[in-house]
Image (cartoon, rainbow, N blue to C red; front, side):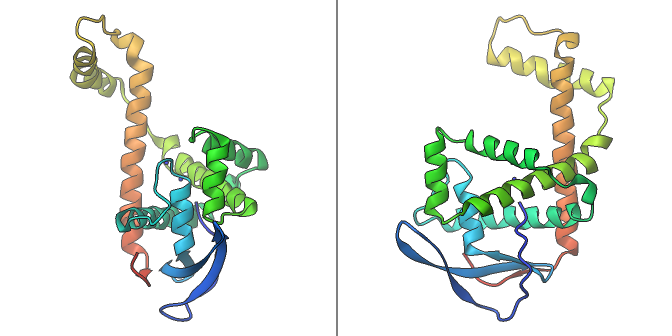
Length: 220
């Protein structure tokens, strides 16, 4: 699932508004929503952009729960991106960025629908590329930080096969011939690796949030 907006303006007042790019011919007044560690500003537009890149997320009068979910996701992305910025060796290439853009478009039924959502929230082509680049940087950091050191033992694979894989497959299609442990090993290893990475990432974010200075400026 994921960007870091390279906004470097500092907090000058507890509330501030400015005019953002218009969507559907309407003037959208942007507002500051939060700051992360004093210098990372999150605006209402950031949340709309996040929603626009999620298939089926409502854009017209988005619900508070959707906006708050987007806010928490953006905060997490900023925290990871701050760490990723310390490792210049994992900076994305142009090819990486193009591949991420292609992946984003393919999440939607058609390119037309994707670009219509982008247009509706006033997301420019340059900003879209920057978001894609930032997402790649985050993914590269997580791979470097966690995937490279994630190990799955044969015992873990065997236990998962016995306790989870076989019962699940039999419940899904009674009477089928379930793959042998040898046949299912690669699939199970990938499942366990992704599970461990998700768990390690959650722990990393929990620690990062504890150490971070996160200030909510305006409720959404």
